[in-house]
Image (tube, rainbow, N blue to C red):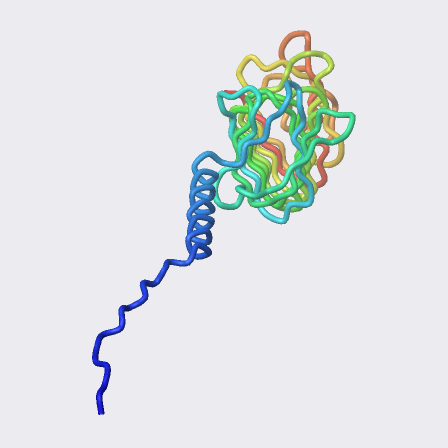
Length: 239
């Protein structure tokens, strides 16, 4: 019996085109992710815009940058956070939490979160926490700014706009207020509610003024600084 012993040629395996496409998609996705991680989530804003973050059960950290028209959400947590422009207003709504961001040095902030800190920003600020900390360093409060803390510490080391239409309010329900202002600060002090203890080195403000009367510090024009408190300890000092 005769057998055909000739070797049959092997068929070459062709690398499936589908596999190449999938590989390219994966590489493209990785490249996009790395790019977004390095550059951050960039949101364009107009001059005088208000940044709005609500119902954040975590932290919001805000730092001023040299940019005049960009908010940048940094880190892994901010890469895919959505944002929108409120209709008929200059308000930018950010739907996220646990955020580290850089913002223009002049911008308005409206934030409700468990923990808030702001560094180097000038604008009208409405910041609210429910027992967490509010920390502001090298900031300037303008307009009808309100720092509202229900039971936690509020630390402010900055300045307040001295114009007559500047009416910043520090509100504390059983927490503590530690307010540091420049030596040349000018303001009309109003105390609403009951202060537990008041420590101050501003001339004209007596430590016994825990429930009033009002006091004037510095020269005109003066902002109206209101302490709206309920059994809170207050440190108000210059320098």
